[in-house]
Image (cartoon, rainbow, N blue to C red):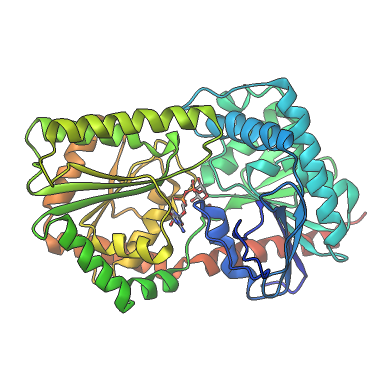
Length: 468
Ligand code: GDG
């Protein structure tokens, strides 16, 4: 990895909201992939992390070797920037508009002002010629703002969520500014190649730029783009899943769920992109048609609370809970619900025990940048058993091609795939799981960070050879 000092800029600092009264802090594993993905890497080298601390003001200590630079946000800014433009405009639009995006003009001003504040914070902490790695759709304007403040920096941008095709992106009222914002970076990284292709098309169409899939020319600069599929700390999850207390907990879960039952498991943030409603409909129909029976099969749905201040998320929760209630009411028996629904956060060890206890992991988002849960399940299955049902619309499908791939919009296909996974031959399952585990062993979180940071460093060295 490059030797430049590194600054990460992300919406959130990687800290637990509930730092102990004595100031002691633990790394936070928030129910969101980004923090989990990056925390491991930064512990390996001195680095600074710029982000929102969760509250209204600066208050946080450093953690280990990582310096923290909190950015304060008022309640109004949280509404306009985070709940508004980031999560009610960009998030739904970038996920195929599976939920109608909301365009509110006043959110834009807040989004831009907050991006500017993050840019100023990054400019202040970054050493000369440092690499600054900006994360995700919350901060899409920041690369250009930072370049204006600090032209000496090497600036990377990584989009964790999908980047949409022109037909969708063109809906954005401030599309040109957003595009210019991202293209302030030296390297724009995505989960999948398709996203780099979409960006090149947009740069041609909206900016008249000369653009290929991996290089976009903006004035005198060349912006590199590419796919860098994010991953997990594979050895950490493998080790966790074999820890004696986790093995014992998994055994207890199997016992509590019914020793002879086949266990389907889903773990998602409670988000409309994750396809929870489609999955519940498919499961209800399987029960209705007698293809699965409550006495021998059970579904465990973990739906971690998420973005509860956004109305569409509260509505979704009501709908899901209504549907789970209906399914259990109609098909459950005393002491034997059809679905165990858990709307609460779990710690890593509990998640690992759930992954171990499941027969079929059901990951069926309607659209997902990557989906780390799918990878965690594979990493937790050291004995090669278990089936993964995986949506074609998750970035992970491009890598985990021996999963039971499915189009979650096709309910009949989803039902058939669930049945195929439930009834698969153990040797077939081992072969599929073995291939996925071999892929992950080579493509873990360290490989991801190395690939991205090496590519970023390379763009810096290329730029230095160019005449002014
Ligand atoms: C975004 C993109 C992309 C879940 N419940 C709990 C918990 N989790 C952890 C999982 C996993 C992570 O959260 C979820 O990551 P995902 O990738 O599944 O989904 P998003 O939150 O939507 O993440 C996504 C990711 O960024 C990274 O680039 O893959 O496509 O949407 O690690 O294990 N962690 C804890 N308690 C829980 O209850 N501690």
